Image (cartoon, rainbow, N blue to C red):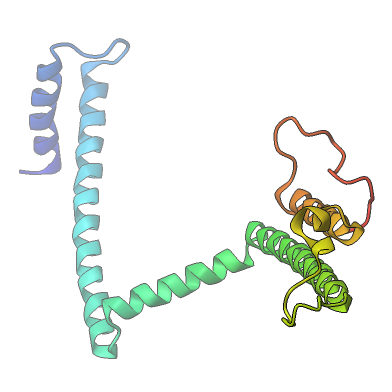
Length: 184
């Protein structure tokens, strides 16, 4: 069967199944379109067969080179990760996280210094005469210690750090919880 015979047999089934020709299309035009469609579908089928053959050949070459599917996946992952790292969005995210890390590091450093100073002040206080070197005088009981200037300063620094690291919660004003504008 040549292509014209094949086209006319398809035309008779294609047009007959719809019953009528589309508006503005003559039977001769419909037959030409049907023949062209058949040719295109045949070409698609041929290309699929060629693609399958090429894929088999590529797989055989990779096997002979010792390239396994796992190594291909690793290579694709590495390439994809490299592309992600080179993207502008990744770079911006990395810069933001780096800045957040520096701020957090500075906050913890400041809190550490405040705690160290607090303990230094406490260590400088005289011990009681009760015989134990570890008891503090009654004046440093917890309520009294909470009202001390160094504890208030430490408390302000912790609140300020919390505010800067975590941000405002709902209902808080635009000003930090402490009145000073020191970093911590």
